[in-house]
Length: 92
Image (cartoon, rainbow, N blue to C red; front, side, top):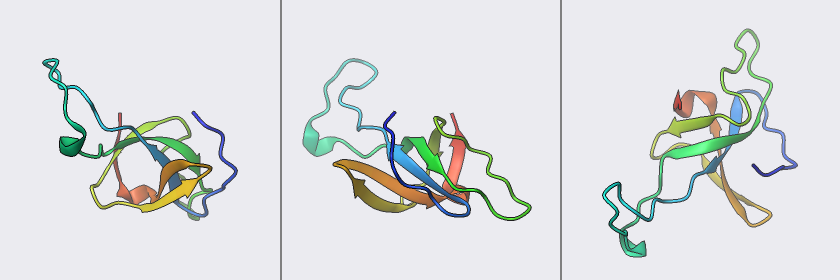
């Protein structure tokens, strides 16, 4: 997990998306043109939460999020997504 120098505000969460899968469960390799972005990532930084609503995710959690969730950021050559905690569907 990388150390980032950014602190999200309120209920926002910074997520580092996991790389696309290059091989199927049966062992077939997926060409670059057919790979889809995963909807899983690792929480890198979290905000303080809203008043009376603490955050349920913590740094290091692996989460599932919606297809169109968050805003894409590029910091120090690494891609991240900044999203609200409500855009996160599950912790896995």
